[in-house]
Length: 160
Image (cartoon, rainbow, N blue to C red; front, side):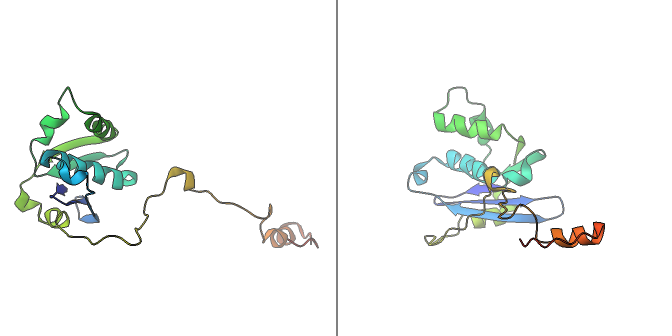
């Protein structure tokens, strides 16, 4: 579920059973000037980018209270920003469904939370370059001598 207001975006990642993740963020100075339809599409792009690791490879249904988004996505002559967003959406097995604002109350509230400037923003994205990047200072682990002794009865006097 995604929603946008004049100054913030809100999104919820859910399954059939319940909610998994809540996300919201404020719009910057340029994004405040977007049309309502573009803000709603930006909310979807924000949600898909935020929940990317959870959503890739599975069917994604996005509920929004803005029915004209379907027509914006089918527009043939679009601006470069809109084309970039559409290309991002094509990475997902995506279906956009309409849901009235009265059924999107939590997302509606998330998109209207006034947020004071983040002094220390939380970095919760993990680029692929940093995943499983482990550096080892010693070529052999600290327990190698113990394993060698238990398996082969060889005692090494070399210290690590």
